[in-house]
Length: 242
Ligand code: NAD
Image 1 (cartoon, rainbow, N blue to C red):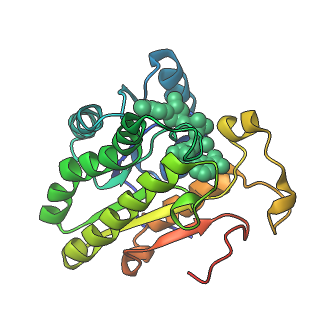
Image 2: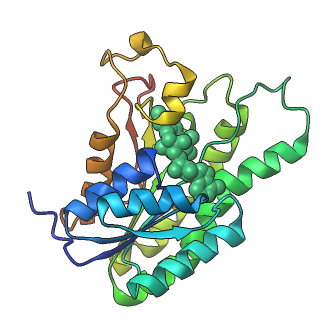
Image 3: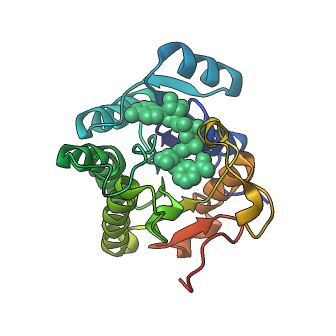
């Protein structure tokens, strides 16, 4: 299927590996010009060279760094039609482990405020041109809190509320705003955690490339009527009705 986005311009954050890179590669395969960022110059340049992407060095763990990534991508690409907010996840821990309230503030910067900053920078121009796509990579933790991830559970709930509100405000301008909620996928981060697939109804952890294809579809012309959605991509792992 032709996704109808050839020639569009995309900024995909935190994408020198993992799910961000998978989304960037899937978009590039559709003829989208894609700028990615990472904190490590050598790593982001190697990933970009391998897949024909534009490398940018940025730390999107703070609102300032996130905003700078979008400004740099805008300059390099001549505009941004598609934004994929993403970052590494906050550290694990239960309530009793995380006694420093500052840890919650840092998690909010990383997993909530940085996405807000990217949207503040990119969405007004999308509205003005009457076309745009925001597909944020969040987590299954936003749908179903994960017991040992209290920082992620808290910050992801906040960003999901922001994205839903934004979606309603900009829908009439041709801008869709959605999030993808990954369950376990075979990225470096998850492999290092040694995840057991027996708790996943599909019986296996997900393939990053499949995740990337879903992200690209949400950016497509055909997906223009999907907005305000927070979609689990989890092999059936989440248990609730919504
Ligand atoms: P990953 O560690 O494999 O890749 C993350 C990428 O982001 C790396 O390239 C890293 O260098 C870059 N990065 C991290 N922090 C950054 C920062 N502050 N600024 C710029 N670049 C940064 O991770 P992943 O598995 O692809 O996860 C991506 C997101 O999805 C994370 O928020 C993670 O919590 C969430 N998630 C992933 C899974 C999964 O199964 N992979 C499951 C649930 C949620």
